[in-house]
Length: 623
Image (cartoon, rainbow, N blue to C red; front, side):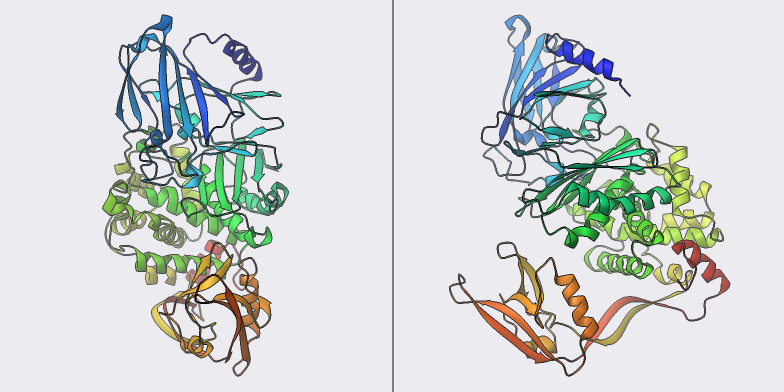
């Protein structure tokens, strides 16, 4: 860790603009023209005659080729003593420069990725916002450094020094420590390009809060344009979660500082999605700006997942990640570990700490299992999918890492606890793998299963080879029986509904609407829904998105057969510009519902099942 005195020395040397071994970047955040900012680079010494100046095609955590060089324009290279530098654009991300030893400065413009721009190829593939960059003059600058700053191939292990000239009262929120804060300018320093890419920065007039968890200082930074959500609310929401995660990891966290950077969008995003991107010492979130309380559990779930990446891949990763190639990326086989185990731990830790109950955990895991077998190829080897995830025909399987990947984590955990008499689970395994490897030591993809088997049991090696590396579906019935759960592929029940049409969300009106009647049930037919109907109220209670969960919970808890149900809707008129308020009415009745992949607790558990269930839940059975 660099000391402040060293940073100040760097700061004073910057004013001389003298060449050395460091990259020295200058950005003026006060000058934004058409969503572009200009960048000046004082280059490090280059000891060869031809060199490639690159922007990443991909960065860790995205699992998708984005070609960030698409957003760079007007690149110019100035040579020492007015030497003319030849520039040849090799591809979307690479500029070949010569004579490289005479390069002194590079200037270029950067367009943000959150808004459409007119640069070539930028409309081909929209960048998921947490992995991109946003420039809002005088309001907010959300900077993923990989979309702004380039590097010379073969020279990525040099220091990078960033100087930002900033608007009045703006402050940089980041997980970085080497920062010299000034009134009009800040200087930020990192050790190499990998550290730079690993470090998003958000500039705005700060709404921040801090939490101390064991020895770790946690920064929460929140930009909510309409002030619906505050850093104080987020920190209070996350504190219990972070304590639970600290306990889950054995009583301490493996980082000294961590930053949660939240940007809440008042409208829809260009990508049509929301979510987050993890980093070693921070995570960056782009989420819809709903009412605070309606987002509370969503905040916990998404933050729990991203925060647990401090374990993997920060401390457990393959060589493909440890030596990541930004312009010719090679994929690791073990997305089940990096994303799947992380997703599982995010939910399991909340259940063990009683933030959610065990029923919620099981419901979540079974929903993930249902999704994985319905929407993805259940017989595709997970390691094969991971290794080939950048290929177009395979990439559509990627999101299964959050579905089947999490279920793999649950199955592995239960199996470990069963084999160890309740003494060892995935929590212990991840700790042991972290000790074996760590931040600066990578494993070989082909050796991981054997390493895990050596740390645990032969049966674990067999499970991984068959169901993760192989093509055999997960043995759900066998695994769940170890904690006293009976698994059935299909069963029937009679339940109340609100008609079961297919709903979607209208971004403009902020209401749910009927998109299709394909799956409508008998009660829905009685109500006489029509395509386009937008929901307002049910039995007098609001069905606004922020309140819908609470309203429907009350509805299902209080409804009885024979009750009159009134659903108030807005029905678009023929021109689709005006709406007519209509009350749809029907008499409540239960509908036969077919459910697949259901679980039930066996009445009389064996001592072994009770032991494994207790170890897995962390609770006394019956609680």
